[in-house]
Length: 520
Image (cartoon, rainbow, N blue to C red; front, side, top):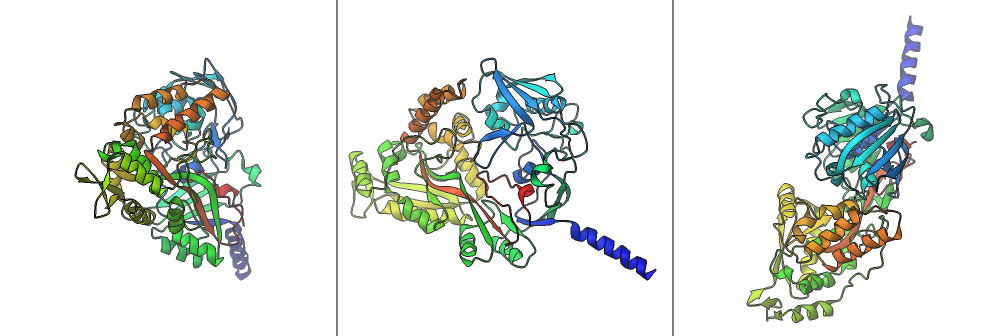
């Protein structure tokens, strides 16, 4: 009896030991995992569970996913996709044209919920050509169709059995059954989440079967507590743009205790100038501010060598964004000349005045964001050097978002959206209320000119032609000339891991963590 008990224990122990588990520190739970959900759904987790027709690679290029090929017909109003065969959802259901249609019909039904997405308003219908061929018909051409279809939400697919008859995935949260490499199996609010390998995952052979059987997240909000969890081996990894403050990342990188990873530019942090302010209507003033900022000194002080100066709003590694444009350079003398040419005069207190009004502007920033606070203080000092008084206004995050999207600010910080949103989808957002770009364009005489240029790009049907790239370059130059966005720094995705963990590559999409590529 004793011998049998020992054998049983040994068997159980060997089974448990054979399970490869990766432990990650993160700031919040995965959420309910609705493929069309937003607020209570973490994108990195949705990306583990759900897949779409196409996706982006590490460099932001569109590549096949559940579609193996596609073609464009009917003057770019019809996209025909050949679907991958042999794919199953994690409950064993077959992935086919019916599954795609039911999911996209749900998006069409709930288009108002997804109104931020230009594609949602352009979707007309979805046709099944055969069991593995689907046609998406648009109301009008849209040049960023493939980019939007690569988004983590709302264009990825849940098992059709989980979609109710009324197709309403806004009121109803389905079970998280997708075709992706992992399944959400357990969630304890404020404590942890557990993901297990999808036994039906179609692409597991590419990764030699996927090394980690289980991904466990440990919810740790405070950054130093995350690092302590790494040091005490409670977790193997911290990953994400917002999970690791730069000061902690810098110390860890210098210590050499753990492996550290930095991506290519993921997005751009800019200083936004709102022409709704009487002073900022003056283009000379906006240019003077741009040339008064010593970006090199600012980025070095706040981010050390771990980030780089952003000359332009969109990094050159974005599609169509690597254009020939002469960015403004730091030049205090030029800044002062521009102010004087606009009728500003410097008084004894060292600040410029016009019509007896002091040149004073307010910069709002998120109060508990250490990087924004540091940048604000540096900008205050740099603008003081040329005679502009900058009042700093630390703001609670929700209030900050409301102020920036409604245009209730003089100056603020704004991050671009990253791949695959840049530049086409973000430019399109300039035409729609609720976005910072809309708020700052609203009071400019060039607004209609910019809108027409955006429409010309969005409705273009010749994506592969040189003329399309030229149109985008012209539009970008027109936006840059306005000096309403002053790019400061290119953000980078960050990761810290134990030395034994391999296969990590920090990609330019901060919402994607490719756990299925990691191993020990």
